[in-house]
Length: 196
Image (tube, rainbow, N blue to C red; front, side):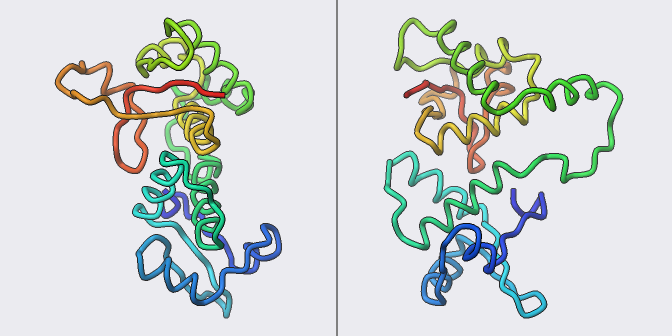
């Protein structure tokens, strides 16, 4: 995702803005494990997260692993940047049909989208902590851009405010379930539950 959006993080920015000093040993471990890529541009280091790095970040969040090491914090930060980078960084070619949706999405904040997700969850579940189908959520959020929905859901997941998982038996799913799924680390996920 970072590669698609051409989003990278400079070593200097990592230190200055985020207070993380990624030393050569930590950097080498992440690069050797193919979780990040590192390159030198004009005598400065730049980092990007790999698909394996994204999967590792998601796996650690799902397993509720506390992010304490410099390497872990860097990986989490790179992953968060990949989620929060505006989609407008990619050239907009089609403007006709999707323009009204994009205009609305621009007026809705991530906080408002999270509130709407929580409201939708309360409507489609029999009780708190129960799994709900993504199809039900998508049906109640048709006025919000799908990319924005997915970005907010991923951010909520990283913050431990929502659980998102694939279903156990894929044969029970219809085309609408597959269309509503949210992809995380290349895996389609069809259900969610809202936590705190």
